[in-house]
Image 1 (cartoon, chains in turn red, brown):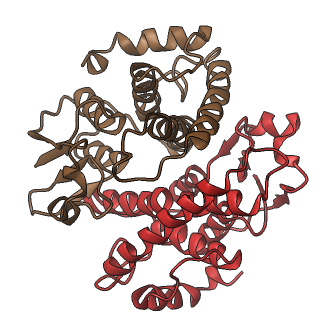
Image 2 (cartoon, each protein chain N blue to C red):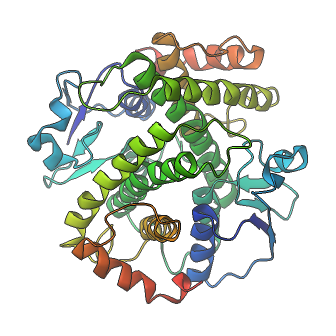
Length: 202
Length: 202
């Protein structure tokens, strides 16, 4: 198997962290997003949506979408368990993973793309919408902070894929200097806990 | 258990269809989105994100996010299987479910909100971004159509939760008259297949 990915992207890093937690070492190919390698016809044969990461399987087929790739490795390597055990815990992890992605990461990424024009060679940029998306992401963080006042990790006492999505999102948006309230007290402790994990140290 | 939901919304309908496929009958409470019932402090105690659907559990806790609620019922009622069996099929369903949601449904919903101003009493509206989102959703449909030339359902021969996300998204965006290429030939056959299912007939 082989992973097509790109350093410095939140979705690439989500899969990287997940594989490190599972102690799975996979050959990878860096895709040049800035140069548009992900939107070439060759790449779209692997993923018609033109996005990384993409997993090339042994039989030559492809799985894309970060969470789909992670779920595949969760089945192959069930320990440590990152998607939860039992109906309720699995649902809670899914809920927090989606909240982290839909309420925070996607809005922050939309803000980044529209405020910086990073992909302005290939997509319509709208600075006002970048600002609106930034505000939506800003407003989401205190909700996570309040939740983390009584929870070690998003889904409770156990680290899960929801924390990978949220932690990779937070690290990325801070790296690109988005104006987000990173200094919320519970969020600061939570990020320190994540940063101690070897999987986050790359 | 009790479901807080809203008729006519794509996310409410996703859970409705899923429960109908599972033959699960659940008491439900209609939430008045137009009147802002979902953003009251009372509702936010159930889901701080202020979104439907929300499942109230027997112990008084709450699960939100459509896919998290569906996953919970998949565990309680494994048949018919809608999240797939085995590592690869589960990953393929996750991939197509996310493509349907992230590439189509979310962009179409953003177009709807910004072009119509449906929630303009509570969120910033940006018509240009509505138009951009519509174009992104328009450009995604031919990719699904091409895939459906050789697949009965998004993830292959078997109906899955990915089809619920995509089908509910298509039905909603056609109901609100978004300018999308609904007439693509494989998409038309696919929608006819979905429409025959009793779960889609509501």
